[in-house]
Length: 213
Image 1 (tube, rainbow, N blue to C red):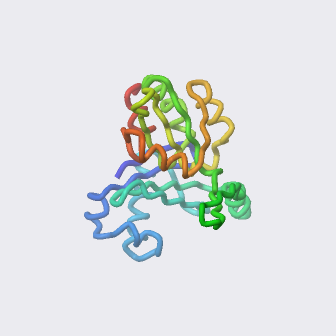
Image 2: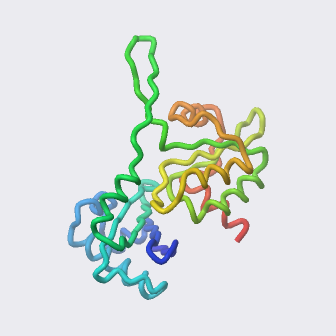
């Protein structure tokens, strides 16, 4: 179990296969509030308090779980000052769908949501390392790094950000300092999957950030 304090009101916890196996719990069980899941959550909060003084007693919490792979999961715990703010924060956190319509040869229309995906390209791996270091504390989500074997460019694909305190425009401003934004859609990501070289899957920013640690 890896715990990281993001701010006074937010922590990130990563559970791997060994953590789950030790407690005889599956990732799917976490969503149903079983007794084992509740015991695990208490253990996580005790560890967060011991390590960072992160006290959740009598505090309303918002919890987001992000699967990183088949056997690891990232949990974001946020303390909300006023209970009535939770729904407001959730509504702000869930952007309205921004869809584009594509017509297949069959004539059937297919709508693709595009606002929860960002794709940027970079000329060098060093650029990706530096941008990863800068946005690491602002972004939390599934992200992967690809290399275009034809032109040598690196493509960073970022999925939905689970840090409710982060501003997407701020993150994009940092990304734009180092790279170039591309059409960000599932179709673009699928193209990279088929024609690019997958270098780091799901947690590229965390891995690359360590190069400057």
